[in-house]
Image 1: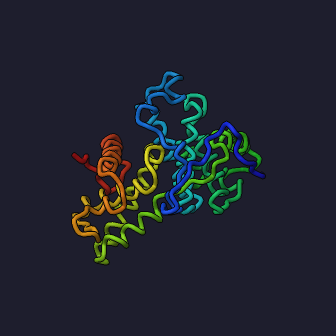
Image 2: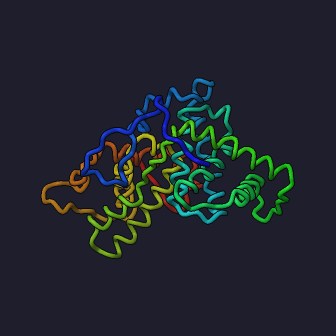
Image 3: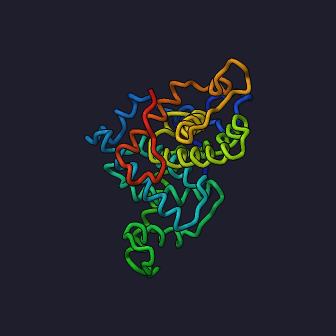
Length: 281
């Protein structure tokens, strides 16, 4: 499928400071304020945002399981999750089921990230995850196979419309690796911090953090949270400044992101593995 250029009524890319790393260049029209989440299309359909968050999380869990079946890299899954969250800022979750959109986001993200998978394989993975049977044999002529195939192809156009053909979706991973190398010199501590911070970014895909903050802020929040979990102090290279000041990130934003992750952990601790997020004062 050939993708056209964005329509004129879609978000236009904001001007960027040349000093900002390319991996952090996110269209600011995709960054939303807290009060805007009370006015989503789903809320106008009578769904409380607290319930919408639960449904979004379920959609991301489905998306992640399909990605695991397809052995997709985490970068592709994060891009798919960002597409998913962006979609529901334009369309109601009441009218478009989160499994259907999750499957479509996987399909489109594999194209964008050039980690292509055959549509047949994506459809089969969706069938198995939806029916909770990893060994389910799928007949390519079955109604279930064709139902998922039609869902993905039908919703692809709708997803492209919601995205306004904006495929510039930066992720925090590259920036996070840069920060760990910059601020953590001890190899043992750096490995532990990187593992914990990487898990933070992975888990954050289940929240709307990608719609609230830039990848730079999320990478900083991941590092901050990991430092508290691993009990490792991080020191700035510039005397007299905190490390987050050196990268021009607000500690208020960092703690807000950490608290959103703490809320996620408190609401579903059984799904968060060994990583425990606590609120920051």
